[in-house]
View 1 (tube, helix red, strand yellow):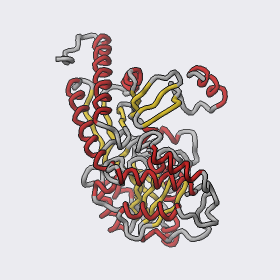
View 2 (cartoon, protein in one colour):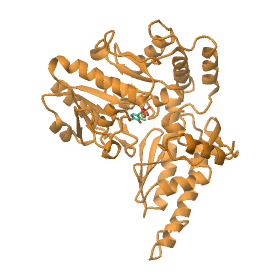
View 3 (cartoon, helix red, strand yellow):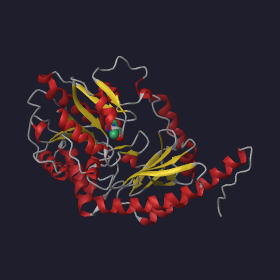
View 4 (spheres, protein in one colour):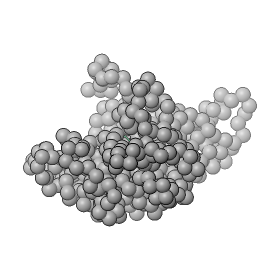
Length: 413
Ligand SMILES: *Cc1c(COP(=O)(O)O)cnc(C)c1O
C-alpha cells in the first residue's frame, strides 16, 4: 500500500485521535523508511521508546528465541524472565531491597504507583498526591487527574479526587500544597512532554528532604526519562536522589510493550495477593525483550555514548541557536532528551526538517524535542545538525519575508 491508501484506510477505520502525515514501513538503527521508500533520520525514536535503535539484532534474536519457547503463561505461574528483569532493574536503581511489578504501559505503571501510595497511606487517612504543573503522567482517568495540564483533562470530568498541583522547580509551592491528607509527591526528573524542562539541581534533593521531614513518599515518573535517556539509568540519578518508588515504560522494551513500577524497601511489600494484577504484565516475551535492551545498554556502553553524543548535539544546536537569536531562545535537556526552545511555534520547524528527511517532535507549542536512539553516531548527529541548520535558515528567510521590516539578524554571515 502507498501512503495515500494507508491514510484512506486509517481515516475510515481508526478514531481520529492522531493526525499522522507519513506512513512508516521499515526501520533499522537510527533510520526509518516510508511507504514510498523515502529515508528519514529518526530523532523521535517512537517518543523515547526505541532507545537501542530500530530492530536491533540482539533484541530481534531474543524475541525470536522467546516467541518460539513460551509467550505467555499468566502470573499464576512462575516465569524465570520476570525475576531476572526485576533483579536487573533493582540493581541499576541503586535502591536496596527494591522490588518490581510489571505491567504494559506508562499510564498503567503510574496507576500502580498511585494505588501503592494510597494503600500505604490508607491506615493514616492519607491519600492526596501532589503533582507538578506541566507534568505528564498518562491518559487513564487517574493519571489524567495527576497530569498538571488542564488541556488534557477538559471534557473528562469528574476526575478521581486526591490530586493537588504545585509548581515544578518551586519547593515552596510544594510545601504549600501539603496537607494532613498528603501521602506522596509524584514528579518527573525532567518534564519531557511539558517542554523538556529538567529539574533544577536543588529541586529533587529538596523534595527528598521535604518528603522525609513530613513523612511523605517521593515517587518518580521515569516513563520517558528512564532507561538511559538522560545518560544515567534513571533520571533521578542525575540528582543523587532516591525515590521511594518509580515507574518505567517507554524505553524498557524498545517498542515491545512493557511497563514497570519499582519500589524501594519501604514500599516493596505493601501490595499483597489480591491488591493488584494485570493479565499481560511481565510475560516471558516482554521480559525477554526488556532483558535484551538492558544487555545492549550495558555491553555497548550506551550511557556514556548518551552523555558524549548529547554534549556534542547540544554544542551543534547552540551554534544554530546563536545564528537565530531573534527567534531561538535556547537549548535544554539532559543526555539525549533535548529541546530547542523557540520564540515561535515549533510545528513549522518540525515540518521543515521532516521534508528534509528527519523526524523530530514539536512539544509544548514552542519546543522542538530531539530523542535520537542512545547508540546514535557522531555522523548521524552531524547529518541532523546539517538538516536542522538548513531548515532554520529557510524558516528564517520565510519569516523575514513576512515581517514588515527587513530582518537584520545576519543569517549566513
Ligand atoms: C508517555 C508518558 C506516560 C504515559 O505512558 P503511556 O505508555 O503512553 O501510557 C507517562 N509519563 C510520562 C513521563 C510519559 O512520557
